[in-house]
Length: 516
Image (cartoon, rainbow, N blue to C red; front, side, top):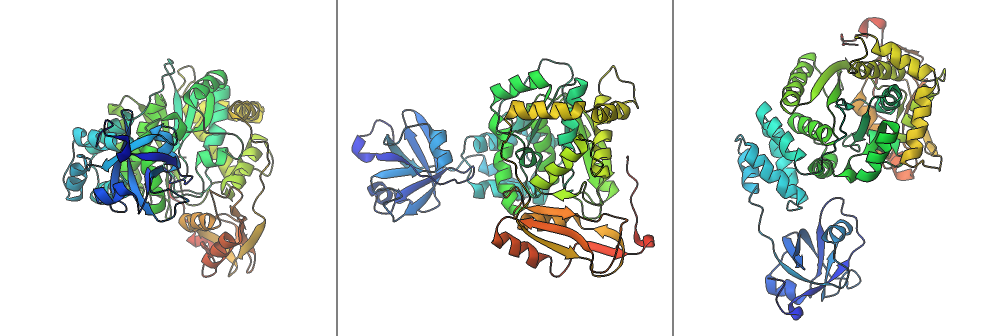
């Protein structure tokens, strides 16, 4: 069907106020003549055309004229915005041809190795909206189940990088930091950025939202300031303040990554090869020349064995070297959450306590942030090796980091409404007396998510005890906050059978050797 066909064969475009979260969805009435003539089926992909523009969408069939009339074609919020035509505009509708790149996905499902051309075709079609979420899920499962060798990871990284804009700062050293995740709390980026920026180095930190965790850097920063910055605002802010803490989604940096994350999140998928390509494509797109990578290792972390951490570090270094990125990876202790708070509001509390040099500030969050910031400061050719930590500590203790953070918050757009922890609260108690010898990161993260984090900013878990602490029977181990009764009950029921803490004696407490 072409744009030149008579108007009577067309449907009137209508915006349908439904957020379909990064998926193009179309709505057609069951009594629509085009629906009957074309033999469409629900969940089939259709192609919508008008004035030389085209968009593909997954079809939903409705029986309610309040959603769409028989002579209308509805598009979900994202699809309508992406299509860019006004409501009431006549549009053509036809069956969509399956993307040719799905052949590569099917071959990957069969266990074949794909080349750069395959990944380029797949990411290009995803960026154009030609993949449904089911098709993206098939790609993610195929690459996760059958794995990617290091050259496939390199190919996927380059292909993802090409799908969006790439920032250029015209400076020889642009620093960035990333943690592979899996450790609740661990909000070091909100401390590292103001410290490094106050030193004078450029550090434009763009972050994803949480995939399987109770909060990502962007989720937490949004408690303090806007993170949805357009490229022009981001450029102006970074050049003025030397740093930012922004969400990468609105800047179109490797947008395929955000589209895949929208599928990874509900499925709980976070495969190693996809993770490496996701991180490095985003960092390169943000214009980074130097990257410090944090790989936590622990019995309930994303990486559980030292040998796996070493293997992952080698993969990052291999890909980083070939894409021109100076990359240093440090292996850190992932045996327990970092800081006390898990969830956006509680994590912000910890961050601000460290920046304000509050005596109640969590020591582990402060020290880890200083050590990571010190390593980044040592990228500066004017700083001698081993002096970065003391420089970072001086910046923090002098108040310069706090002042820089407030300037970044104001430049991004300060959130004036002060958020508090959720109003619904319960405590999880120790079943016996002894020493805390184990904390299950995954269990506590899941508890915080069931409580509503990160969508409910005030939801989460507040740790009252950490590894090595002695507790008495019946003593609170942690406190759970929720904003809505359903989340409160989900979290409370989840913690009835077990606490996620292991209580024993001092001999049971063992900590692996880490780089720091």
